[in-house]
Length: 405
Image (cartoon, rainbow, N blue to C red):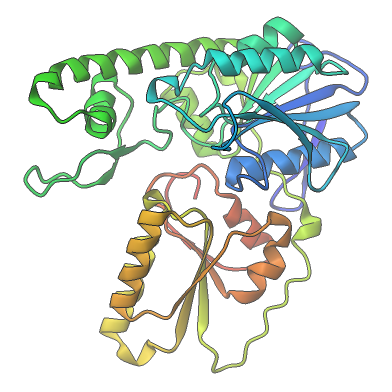
């Protein structure tokens, strides 16, 4: 039986029978695998993998918890493995596979990462009974089969987005926008099709730009996507259980992707509530309202929509210009951040840019300084952690009524 603290504060229980997922063992050893891990990476799957690792290790119901993830150190050779430990629990070993130089064709199978992973699995002591994958992007889709072959372990996969269903992970078409073709830079995709993916998301991004190569490149990327999706299906057959943190995601993977319903369990994210207490937001009646955004400076996150909305308010009601303030938290992206900063300055918006923070400091660094959290994503997000964290602290959230939001 696994017990997870849900967003309502209730304990969610999931029973694993010998006929389904985990055989009866005494204090199983758990290996968590993800494409990144804090403090090097602090997005949703990374933060949740760390939360899960620390709580499992402290539950005293596991004999060992270990981590395999990737890092991107451009000053070290690729596929070197570095061992460190979790910043909150030094008894949790972390094995980081360096992968700083990645070619597009390596995005779903990487035999060098497979080799590193196999060596690590063979030398882990105690041997993991359970291998729990959080994300395989930038790693290799054949890792679940490697884990099954070497460890004979039960394989669990938490679905944090649509990456298994969609080669770009968000069902968001990312092509070359053009006023001549009336094509927008980002639009929601209705479903995965090899040729459509090749045309709208890959050929437009990786094309050489020469007319003579156009058909050849289209054929190549159509083949590449077909191979990628075939490999995904093989990986899904190897995985014993999928965990869907939102009903929206569970339904899509069953109804659209065809995963067996008995293999896809709905289980909301659990949280360490000890870091989500003692929020103190003190403001006088005349202080401006503060709207906070938390996350990457990525176009898919819709920060530009937040700024456009603020600009419309200022233009329509100039008397409100000093009545609200925006704080953007997160790791900057050079091109996107520069554009957003220029956009905010032109619009005359009161805005502040603050750096990334450790998730354990979210109350002191973020929630004590904002009145509202805004999640303006333009893709149908799974179940953003920040929404749950804000609601745990009784902070209103403004977001679209789409997907898991």
